[in-house]
Length: 250
Ligand code: IPE
Ligand code: IPE
Ligand code: MG
Image 1 (cartoon, helix red, strand yellow):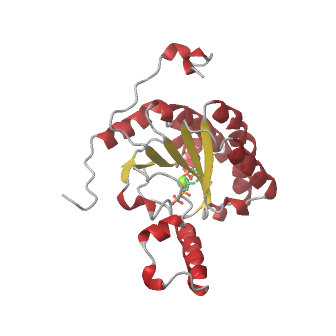
Image 2 (cartoon, helix red, strand yellow; image 1 turned 90 degrees about the vertical axis):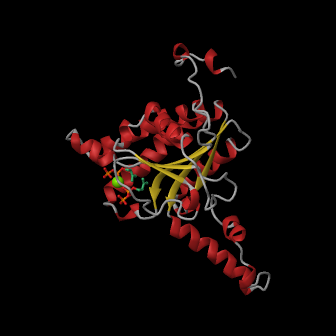
């Protein structure tokens, strides 16, 4: 499956991966609304441009040596938005992101989801399940989409599962370990998050990967998500590569 043999961008050549760069990058894709507002366009136009940015970044990430990319697409708090915006976001998910699937598959990418995505409308859930199933043996790159995801909700679900085990007597409270909690998170099968990026100038986690962020590096950029491209991702990866991670040691 030589990528250079394909029609697309063969002339660009393969850019080099970032030495010492992050293996697992998670992105809080923010700023679609402000991007649209700056152009006097409806918010939907910003979300559509955001989908284009997702397409670009999913292609760029493996070129930079990133093995796992987690994208925060819809938070458990985004239901607070007006109903028409929520329904626009769900249609984009139905039509665009899922249409990407074939290409993901042909590029050896595996799709995974985190969050309470099974609570979405049944047709979406069904398509997502099919997509996960269809790509589950791909190992070149892993795309993780956080859908109806909230870090607190994820921790609550993990605690509930442990609570059930305490109630049935298989676990005692004193034997709970960080590993046991981690095993109950949606990210249990994923490698540790190395770098969290947030676009649009906001500097907060907005309930993203709260547990997993413990020792992740953070990188913020004023670039609005629809303007995010490979060059900005490379800048973030290079910033990561230049950092010293200490994990509390010295
Ligand atoms: C991010 O852009 C997309 C989602 C949260 C789904 P926003 O819609 O939050 O854009 P701003 O923050 O209003 O600019
Ligand atoms: C975080 O962005 C959620 C996603 C990117 C999906 P928001 O735009 O919802 O976050 P707040 O409301 O500014 O904290
Ligand atoms: Mg926002």
